[in-house]
Amino acid sequence: MANEHRIRLGAADLKRWVASVFVQSGLPDSDSAIVAEALVDTDMHGISTHGVAQVPFYLGMLERGVTNPRPNIAIEGQGALLRVDADRALGQVATMRALDAAIVRAKQQGLAAAAISQSGHLGALGYFTRIAAQSGMIAILMQNGPPLMSLPGAERRAIGNNPISFAAPVSGRAPIVFDVSTSEAAFGKLFGPAARGEPIPEGWAVDKNGAPTTDAREAIAGMLLPSGGFKGIGLAMMVELLAGSLTATRPVWGGGLFGGFLIVIDPEAALAQTMFDGDLAAWLEHYEGSARDARYPGQLAAEKCADAARNGVPLDPALHQKLAEIGEKSGTALPGAL
Image (tube, rainbow, N blue to C red):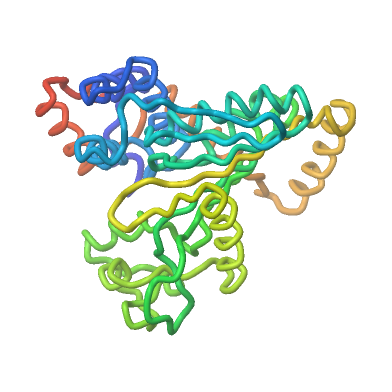
């Protein structure tokens, strides 16, 4: 749906509203602010599937006791690898704690990693890697998920469409931020076409019998296809190894706890900052010169964020209605449209 048909809310007002809803669900003010900032920022950068659309899901997880509103997050480890027991914290809260600790450690010794166990859904991974890049760090973040994906002909879902993000600072410009699932399309992209009775592109999914389908409803009941065939499956296995096996966290279908794996690198530990900045600028210039409209990952999202800051955060009318109902139920009215 085009942005001109969406309802725009002021970013600051929307953040305050989201934070207030989570405070009413038992989160401390500081943690609620973290969740609100992450979700609204994600919408501002154009990733509507992982922004405030996740509010009902996260509230449901809290209500059912799957996630913990007041966790005791434990971070241990003396070397490069930090072990983060999230104690069922919301993913945004757990990942920010892990990221803050990893950045401090990376500045001390050049590189740090964090294995995050027993966490709620992390949301848009690019939000966290972008923060690291804005702090001058290179970051890689991945999360495992419940089985959703298989190759054609499979009889059941084999592995999660485990997302991966990386980001890096670009001197004087928007950071590089790459954030994708290992499936050809994110699972959340099936629901809109399913609700509207519209087909999905070929190559997105197979039905429950493993046959290719363009029916979104059959795809939801079936399996996502990996991006690049066996290459996508291989990347999903890498994520499962690092975010799953190293954290002993195995998500289940229908909601639950997730595992994450984070790597943070201080470029200055490898070479002078000016050398890193210069080399990065050189190959980006070469890349951007390859086509008239060539952009690196993160540029378009930065433009969308600037537009949302000026003109409001665009929300789909159906989502706006759902959030308004949450506001009525909680006694915290959703802010008016701009």
